[in-house]
Length: 440
Image (cartoon, rainbow, N blue to C red):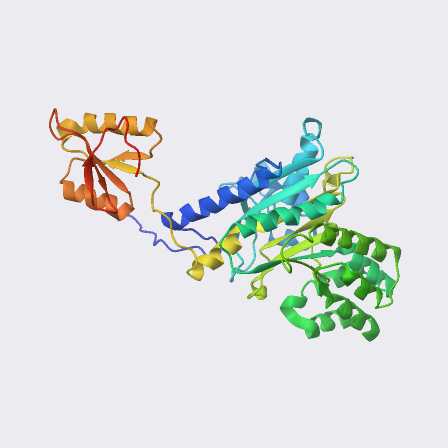
């Protein structure tokens, strides 16, 4: 008989996984985020992990990060050799397809949240993963969508993040109309190329952006200087519009964008000072953003990458349906946030298992009594497990201790004797009735 091959278990780069005590904290975070979304009336949906490749590939440079789906035993003659499906790289494209597909069954404006894994084929590094969880909220409507939703979404995210024990963070807001209108006003023919370059400002600095704009984009020195002046404007109120106007550039689209940006800032002015700011370097590189854009980062580590991002799009569903369906959305990068805090030791692990009570087994002949006791405790709302075998009491207690189970229940070891429960924290053991016991 040939020796069985042993595959050495090793972590796969870019695909994080947690021990149970850390996963339990992540689940609490997910519940907290879900509750925050639902407080504002967002409904949950879930879409398949895969979408058609032609839909995924239509969304600009991110399409090069798509994982395609193949059968391992694909038959070359069956047509399976060419991938037609890919794992979704975000949740916005699947959402647009979902709305188009279920258009006649939805009530508009449609407010949805979606909390799922996504996949991107990029090089793993700090804060960047190949598989990660995003928590998205979007509002989509027929023909037009009220601007007040552009202000509601960062308010929701602010509320959600404030309820988690995170290092200081800031939500930055901008408007693509401001950027595009300004660039057009200084005579730039391809505003999107400049938007993509300016979006890298926090990573490569002024010199890096200047090199791209003068080289690849072919801008004059005067145009480059104007773009960088705009990118350095920041503020937490509508005074940012005055600073833009002082640059002397005029265009109708620029004025429209400044009005929209001012509306969002005014609407959020009751939030703590500095928690939401206008940052005119925020651009978001994806093609489909057309108005308000968002990006949140940690104050002490902005280079780590955005922990929330999103924006307004005018017709993302247009490739699926002949109806104009504008929307606005924002995503919380749960894995990026959580992984950083785990790596820095900021996450205090929860319990390794959800069990409230472990029922001990006095002996093989009394296991049925242990099972009846456990069933009664479960009916009363306690997460209860029965020890897996008849063993010495000390071994059973040790098992409960290692799992962090707070209470061990002892059914009668003999007929006519009382039940007892042991509080593992205090060590106290008292008589108890499974039909009426309440947790101290």
